[in-house]
Amino acid sequence: MAEAINWAFRGFCVGVPRQSDLDIFKRMISDVLPAYNCNTLVLLIRYQYQFKSHPDVADREPLSADQASEIADLCRQNNIRIIPKMNLLGHQSGKDRGSELGLLRVYPEFDETPDEPSVRYCRSLCPRHPNVKNVVFDLVDEIIDAFQADAIHVGLDEVFEIGKCPLCKVSSNAELFSEWVNALHSHIVGERKVEMLMWSDRLLDGNTTGYGEWEASKNDTWQMIDTIPKDIIMCDWHYGERESYPSIEIFSNNGFRFVICPWRELKATQAFMKFAYANKTDQLLGFLQTSWCNSGAVARYLCDGDNSVDEIPKQVGESFKWIMTF
Ligand SMILES: [Zn+2]
Image (cartoon, rainbow, N blue to C red; front, top):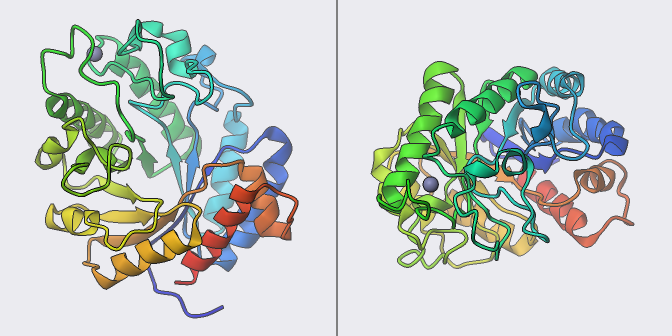
C-alpha cells in the first residue's frame, strides 16, 4: 500500500449492522480497517441499542450491552477508537414514512412540531421541553458506558424544525441552537469528561458559502458559531464535487478542529480531500468517510469483494479505499 499521510483522524462512519451481519461486520473491524490504517470507527447508533433507562426507545434489531461491549473491545484490540453516534436534535423520523423514531415514538411530547405533517424525514426534538434533557442525557450516559467511549458524536445535522413551538418561537434559531449545543457540551465534556463531535452544517451560512440548505444552514443557526466551545470537533460533510470548499477556511478561522466527511462519489471525495489538503491548517485532523447504507453490505464488499451488493456500498467501499491511502 502506498505511504499515506499520517492523519490523526482516519475515520469510517457506519450504521449498526443487522444481527445476521454481525460476524462480517466484526471481520471488517479486525481485518479490513487495520489493513487500511483506519483508526476511528464512528458507529451510528441512532436508537438501535437495548437501553435500560428507557427500554421502549430501542428501535429495530438493537445491539445488546454485550454486543456493544464486544464491538468496542474488538476496536480497541485493533487500535481503533470507537465513537458512538446519536442524533440529538433533528433526524427524529424515518425517511419514507415521516414516522417517529425511538425517542419521539415514546415521548411524543418532545416533538418540536407535533401538529405539522412531516414533509421531510427530519422531525426535531424541542430543546426547551422541560424533561428532554433528563431523557437525552440518560441515553447519552448509557451509550458512553456501553462502549466505554472517550468521545461521542451527537449528530445535529439538517435541523429544519426549529423555533416553532411556543417555548422556542420567542427566541432566534441561533440562540436555540447555541443553547442546545452548550447544554450537550456541558453534560458530555463538562460532566462525563469525554470528547464531543457534531456535524457542522448548521454552523455554515448556506447563502454566502453557496452550500445550500442541507449541507449548510438557511435558517440562521450559523450565526451562533462564536457562542459554542472550541473543543467540539466539527465534522464537515459535503458529498458533491465542487471547485472550492469554503468551510475549510471557516472552521480554521473560527478555531475549531475538524475533519472532512465525503460520501460515495469518488470524484467528489477526491476533490474535497485534495482541496482540504491544499488549504490545510493544524486544525484539520483528517477525514471521516461516511457510508449511509447497509453496513453489512459495505463489510461484504470490503472483506470479500462481494460484487453482488448494491451500488452505494460499492461506491462507499471504493471511496474508503481511496481516502485511506491519500
Ligand atoms: Zn420547542
